[in-house]
Figure 1 (cartoon, rainbow, N blue to C red):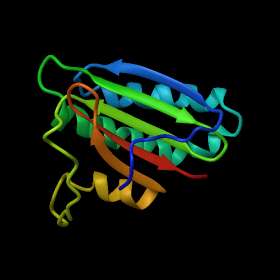
Figure 2: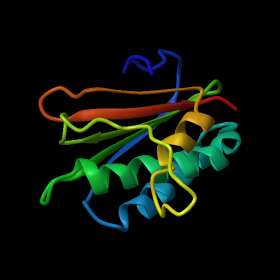
Figure 3: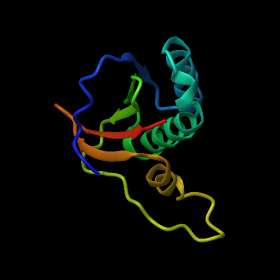
Figure 4: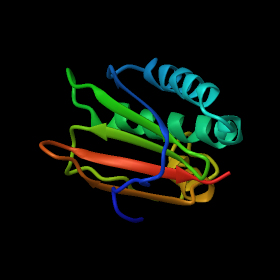
Length: 138
């Protein structure tokens, strides 16, 4: 894991507030599709990006967003990397990388994040909460 600072190179960005809802990961995937369609070479990040944005938003909805709070999604892509940030209100509950057994129905998300990401991490958010972020290289 590393810092919360993103790359200073020219990029295409998109951000949105998502409700604490099981539909939010699907909305995050649609927003990622839009961003990548508008960015030159963006399609190179589509497969890994779809999985990663789903995992991070799902985790934020399930574990990071108390009732009545929303999740903030920030997507940024340039020719070198895709950066996904998910901001939530629970700063005291950071991501926990754990091994899931064969019978577990959940618990593999951060293992996938670690495998697919060039870099990933978690840092405090200004005000309340935290930012879980991931960067993917083509």
